[in-house]
Image (spheres, rainbow, N blue to C red):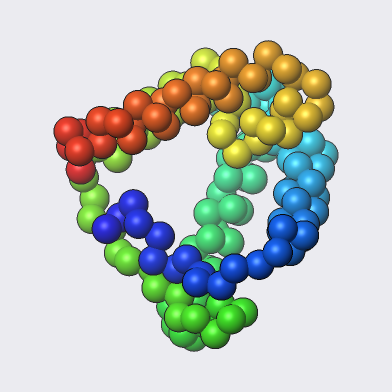
Length: 151
């Protein structure tokens, strides 16, 4: 159940309808570039505990996410189509520790988090294409062996 999207809308839209998502993605990418979130040097500073910059950004993102989820649950907020938003609680398991360690190791080695990969490619850091292909391969491997992994 944790891998199934329960909030997926049943409505279908024409292709041009998705242009707003592209616009939001472009704005998000510009914000990533201007805030230096995609900077390999900023990421290395974070892992060497030399700067608070990235911790401040990550911490504020966590705070906004926590407040948003709280408000969605507390105020019973619905989608713009009036559909109920249901956020299932998840149980903690040791697989999350292993996954977090692998994620952090990959982030530290490559200097690229999955979020800004496309922004890094967009600014001309084409070597990040290797990281993108590795992320896709890792996702495929997880999907292939998901049933045999500890959950």
